[in-house]
Image (cartoon, rainbow, N blue to C red):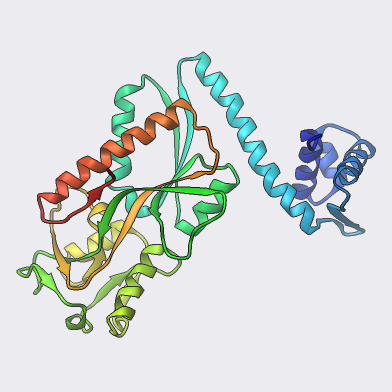
Length: 314
């Protein structure tokens, strides 16, 4: 016999409010009934899920596991209801897509445009965040998929399946008026005195950049501005004073004001999507993944004309 979903909902309400009385009020039931439901849950599992005190109720480590799972279940049930209601009015969805900033200018818009051309109406939500924040949301069921870097070293997560679409090389971006604009290739060792604009810590993008300096034995830039905004990055580079790392994928085509330079002994990353293991996507989710594969091939062709090899998945 599986855990009673209503008992999980009771535990989730207590975790959110921190109180049996407030949770009972939110759920429209008496406090004794709520307490009995929690007691039945604990008896079913053979462990305590809550620690009760005069100051309120706190989750045990077992309770934390259940709440994490319950949050995902709550979202999936709400999505199931929304999908049925949408189907009744000929609308596809909902589809929630987590995306890292570098996929937003090109890959995601191309795929979404192709999807929109096929659907009369749809309900799609894009959640922009860094990799380390999107993964837990995917596992919790708050997202249907995540689009961004995949197969990163030491980041494999149980319960998540990753699929690569593109091999995306890192290069250097300078403004058209920068002293390096006439070059096609640069070495990191020659750039230590430049003014950089670099990503803040916490992303796989930043870790790739750190690795390039480390493996080549080059000191980290001393003169740098740190930001995760692509709009600010592009504006600072186009203005002519700063240089930065970019991957062709994160830029919009065409590239006004930019010069892209190959980096000697540079590195690359793989871009693709992540799903929860065993996930059965909705029809709109399955269709979107097909459009993602097609968009990756188109983008690889576009940048291939500039000499950058973004290799699509076979």
